[in-house]
Image 1 (cartoon, rainbow, N blue to C red):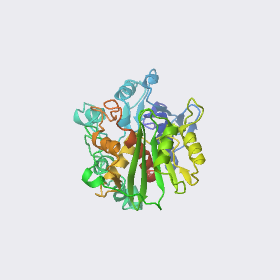
Image 2 (cartoon, rainbow, N blue to C red; image 1 turned 120 degrees about the vertical axis):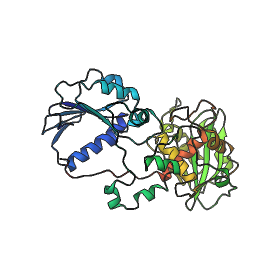
Image 3 (cartoon, rainbow, N blue to C red; image 1 turned 45 degrees about the vertical axis):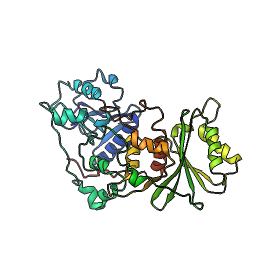
Image 4 (tube, one colour; image 1 turned 90 degrees about the horizontal axis):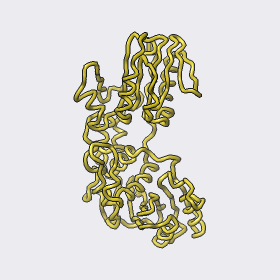
Length: 381
């Protein structure tokens, strides 16, 4: 579009600034360099100028769409459109009014996310002037030429429904009803015994009421959730005391997982993880590792990976829970999405989601998929 509209103003957007910075802009620059297209990048003001045409491309997050007012565009494109609000799309559409443009055009790219506004606007109730291109599964020869079993590998990381959506591009109503659709008591619940020679995994969700955590071990390819600690109106130190009372052997290797927000300082001046670190040190635990990310994964990816471990697209079980973990099992059976949205309902029952969130942080840190491969084509023109 920058070549069709020489000298015109375009915009490439993403739902949030971190997504824009880490994925969209990085991908755009890689494509421009691979195609040998000359450009100048103004990093401080976040725009590109295409040297061949003099076209300017603004790089913007569209989460605060009211800031897009007053811009006359010849074209725009939005990455990950299904994670963008419909209001932002409509605001951008209203800015397509450059009188000198040879072709006014807006476009978006996305992976299906249920029957949302993108599905309604582009597929179900398509209006005049809208078109959609749905890629055929396994069409990406660039990836398959290098990694023939690429899609098969993803089956171990995704549950059946998530694989159909994320890999095969199917439209599914994933946001109606249960969140943990892969859980089945007959497959995923059985009496477990602790392996005294194996490391313990302790994963926490820092919530005052209840303060929730799970204790697990890894046995071969399976995660065994042995126990849960759920304390009402409790502090982090009280959770540590309860953990020590149940698992007093300070010689066993221990790995701590949890919510990235636990790294923030509390009013006492210490973060939750500093409190844990100091308590375990004084209690004599010497072989302790802390596997905490700088930021939490998206809920969609974390839930998808837990579902995959419960029952993957390969029909394999890699997550088993002891029946004593009553709150975790209730999460798996009762946590739902809010109606017509991809947001987990945390309001219907305040006790829900905390144990499953804690386990999700552990599973994500241990099993998160590698960054996806991106297309690197030849010259575009």
